[in-house]
Length: 518
Image (cartoon, rainbow, N blue to C red; front, side, top):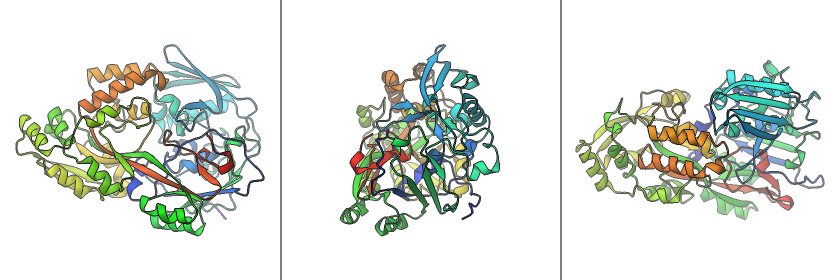
């Protein structure tokens, strides 16, 4: 069948907010085990919520869509099943010049699906395209220039050290494309592959199903035990469950209420405690639009307004976890002790508001987004109980990104997929982070961010990230409420190999039951 041009969806982190109202496919990466050609399980079939917007390397969208494009494109680095950085197309990497020069050494013998060699020049061309155009430029924002001194060496020179860069190179910021075709129209529909699979053009119907065929000449073929992968677009949660029961797909994530019937139908289940986080973001920390938010006592009062344990029971049926911090609970820097900073205490919250000069509370407008609607009555009541009156402004789905990116709203409720801690730190707390809409800064936090960026290996910067975590929690920079869990189900013979440590969306998370590992 002919591939039809794709439509344009919302960005990945907004799509992650569908966790409580749609099928959330939060995934983890895994190093491979030897593939078995004699295995009866030759096809992996799963569902994603929306059509990939494009396969052009500068237009790739993180989130569920990465199931398709991360199978077509190799990336310079990978993230394993434990959330650790591993070699990808680059077999090694080294920092020098105080973290401002990153040198990558490519593997020998890699080829595109066209038969052309993967060279440093091709990598440089792709990185230059991504950092200067499209929607992923910020991932490579610290890169000043890129060199390719020989066929296997790529050198990134940075304006400043950036701890999130290595993680960017595991995803859309680090794809490897064919420079001869990457800007042509065909790249948006059926790109030349550098990854483990090619798109079966005849069997693929854009917006409906994407059929992938494994490449026998891919360097990491053993990490992908399924010769054929079918990824279906199923936007309705109930329809996805029905597809699992009917055998149309053999892996997916479901609500906790569905687990019993699927177990009875022969599916194996696995619970991931945290795939995304629901947070009331307090953007206006200087009180520029909403004066009360400029007072830390007000922000602390807001944190004390929520009965987080009750919300987990009400919204998630126990398939989640309460939290008062943004960091991934399995990542470097997460501190369980911080989750007792703001006990549910409406009376104490009112007292803080009175001390701050707002005994009668105040009013605030917040955007009503397609993914916040189920939560809005409870959040409104919780805030009203301490004197904060919320008016929800309806926002069309196609305007979600722009509504959150402007300074119109001093507060907003979001549900974001969890990322590695260096990435979350950049996105939420750095002056140019996309979730730091008002570009809030603080001298103490600025110093902590500099220290974190000077240690690109997050495992060696645990103490710094813990300090950042403590600063942002104790100063109520945000009001996180709960993590949303994921319940994975897989048909007999297939296993989901992750534990939630990694948030990568990759087919490497799935394996055969007799080869499980990662």
